Every structure is written in structure tokens, then in C-alpha cells.
Length: 329
Image (tube, rainbow, N blue to C red; front, side, top):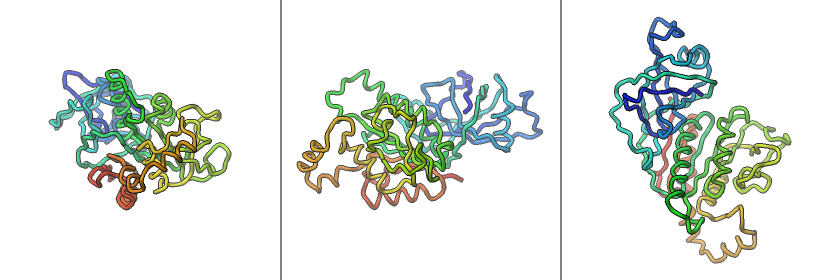
């Protein structure tokens, strides 16, 4: 990833989920290309971190990506312009003004690499709800990671100003994150830390599409309620990160939505208590309440549409208007 410091006099700001056009300034001694070049990279930080901001950039032969991940130096200057309306907006991130037509100068500090999702504009999102589902495929995690960090900050700020009398009423969020291999999954440690700190409100399911990716070399099919996945119960697993295998499917999404609706308290209630609760609920009430308020999807071509089909057919979201997705060019 790359972290940059913007000139605060330019009032640079953004919303979680957005991206920047990234143009190295010709005055940089490390930039030796005769023509101006622009790269597009997802912001993975949140507005609260300004004037520092973080980008997800994959090392490649693209002239801008190669410069950013190999040759750029501290205090090099880049021009950046914010774009994209696939966003998570909250009270603490809503100071964004859409008059961002001009490039803004920023100095860069690069220290590694991450892949990026180059987004296409979608309808702006203003979620004011308690059950959020994030679905990421591959490098589609990048804009979602910024959204999740903002959601986490909002929940932390809310907890400081208001005592929750009933934890079952707390807002919840789930991330379903699929990648080809464990090595391709980004921000695993950071997401596990967020999960540990908000174990009653946040869950992540890591899943890989390449067989034999878990510690035992055999498929681990435990989902969000898996008994052998300590990290998904809010604690730490003895062997580190645990994974499940396979693509994100309807069963995994239903499992996540159940947890969003507090249908299964993985941490406290016994199976007997859960059965008693289910007996008290009418079937029609279960089907009408086990939904998500908003869903954010970013992944490879075809993935957003397939997720939309599942959510719509099984009625797992308030409305298809509440399914927001990023498409790749």
C-alpha cells in the first residue's frame, strides 16, 4: 500500500469506497517518463486519517504502478483527483464536497504493494441501518476495507456517547471475502483485529476457491458459525487464521444474514436456548425479519450480478435498491 500526505490548504477529502486518479508530477527526479501518465487506485483509509491517506497499488509493468511501488521516494509529488460514487457515507465522513474536478498535489510515501480495484461510478449510498453485508471477491476488498474501517469508527464513537442497554440491538456487519488463495487475501490481520475488538458486532468469513488452502490441507467448510474457527467467534485460533473453501454461495449469505439478525448468538447461547427461541418465533416472522438493510459488493465481472440474484431470489435484503455494487472496467 502507499500512504500519501496531501496539502491541507487544498481541502482534499473523500468518502470511504472512492478512488483517485493518480498522476506523478513531472518535477520528480524519480519520474523519467516523457509523457504524463495516470493510474487509478482505491483509497483504503478513511477521511478521519487525513491529511494522510492510503492507496492500494499492485506492482506491475504499468508505468505509474511501477513508479509508485518501486521508484517513488519520500516527498515526491503526485496530483490526485477523487472519483467514484460507490460509497459508504456516515455523519463522520459526510463532509465531502463533490466539486473535485481539479487535481490536488500530494506528496507520496510508498512502502509496499497491494492490488487495486479500478471502479466505475454507481449510485451514492447513504446507509442508516443496523444490518450491513459486505461481499468482496479478490481485489474487490479494497474499497470495502475503507467502508468497514469507517463503520468501525462510527460504532466506536457511538459506544462512547451512548451506553447500549441491550447488545442484541447493536448494529452488526458481516464481510464475506473470497480469494483464489490465502496468499491473495489482503488485510487479513487488520480485519481479524477489527473482529476481535468488535466480536459482538462484526464477523468475517475468509474463503478460498483453491482446494487445500487451510492448515490441515483438507476442506474446512465451517461458515460464520463454525465451531472450529476461533477467529470467527471473536477470539484467536491456536493455529492462526482459519479459512473455509469454495465460492460465496446462497448458504453462506443466508448464514451471514441470520447472524446480522441476531438469529444465532455464537458466543453465549446453547443449542437448547436457540431451539427455544426458534419455537417462539412464527415462520412468517422469521422469513420477514431475516434480511440485511444494505449490501455492498465489489468483485470480478459477473460476481455482483450473481450476488444480486441470490439476494433477490431469497429475499435477503430490504430491497434490491439497497444492493450497491462496484463494477470493473
